[in-house]
Length: 404
Image (tube, helix red, strand yellow):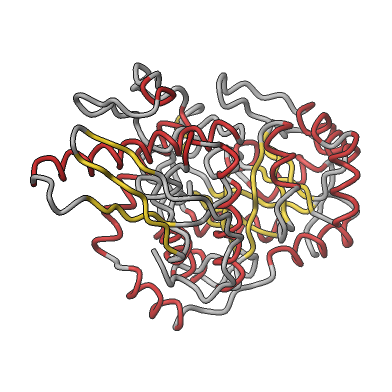
């Protein structure tokens, strides 16, 4: 994935080469400053003792196997090293409080005698633990297929001909100043895993136009087809229809390729989920967004994720999702809890826009999260199910917030 964008190199933490043995084969790790790779199977090979302190390294590793070894031994050594790298990636994610595994776990290669920590690795949980993990695993496969049909180099050329991006962050600030209420990101969504089909007669362009008339500052468009019955064609159709509201591509990003693809389809912003991405990945993806003129909404679910995000430079939009990843239950007090104390102080100091997500159905709900410090809200179900979405927006806020 080298050379995606001309960005400044991420911080490098140098470590000594590691040395592993597999039978009579010596496998050493030669570190190269070749840049960041999103593929966890080849990234973050651990230094000696698999120290978690090396988690911020962006060094890629290349394997060197003794030429005197047999072809079979070399192949087995490579398989073992790839597995060790993958397991170390899990440890890095766990150390950062990331609960979503990016790939299904794999068992250790036959005869593996590597570091004791990895031999104890639990590979029994080979099923997704929650819906977000299931979606993430599927996305890894889906994106791999899409990249074969639309190579990154072709997307880069397509980006050059894409329409200019609109100011997503500015639109939210202006809406808040105009109405005195949180700016609305209205979601164009046909279905969800938890609620099923929300809108039978689903016309994304018609819904988007109604949202715009109702006073939405920005729109969120679901592009996942399997779980939300959305699609990038909906995003493209809304942009081509002349809707002026900036558009958030609501996708489950696991690869930089998706950001380029969203840009070619008319997106003005993308979603990055802290429960899925490491700090280094978020940092790198933010650089890509900046290079492409896109805003990034970084979503958190709990206090640990909020702490991580506040430590990353360049974030303007933080979304607080009130839906539990484990139970799917919604509790809007989650927003208030995450904005209290030191976190709230840092957000105010950095002048970030906090977006309240999930569980917002009434004017009282809006007032509650606004009092907690929210400057924008992302709402889908409570307005998309209305026969008249424009009136649904007025009902949500307790008054008409349209421009007229």
